[in-house]
Length: 182
Image 1 (tube, helix red, strand yellow):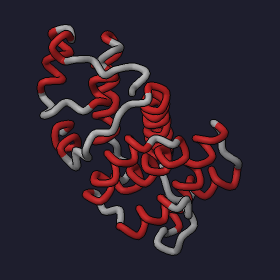
Image 2: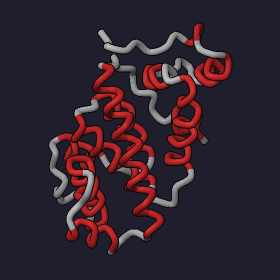
Image 3: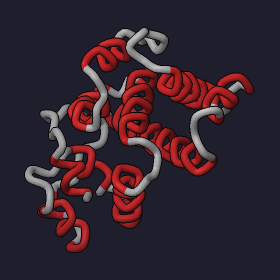
């Protein structure tokens, strides 16, 4: 039983109902976000820009999101992002390694390990150590690093919303959300 129920689209304000009606069916996370009436649309815009407009590699983004979900205990986020990760090139071996918390598995290359190490430190400690930053900076531009930090922060926020609200799972939407965002 959720602590905070997802908003029934029928009682959502018209602008938010219009957005919810675009999803078939509207995922519980969107309906939960819609409880914050004035923040809902800006949150979706930010999420959409992270998913569709960043120069950061989509595969690196999804590895990071899956790591956020795993470290945060956000099963809902994990379930929704595994199919997206697969669609952008993350391998089943990499997903399995993340599920086991093995961020140094041989299926990850140097840049992927740097992203995962950095993500883990940011989620757990807000900051990262100099070695983690240097390893990341050896592979990513300043823009990509900032985009990665924004993605980590956005998905940490969603993870906390999901976990605290005790959101009930939805079946994986697969790439529908990604396609809809585009």
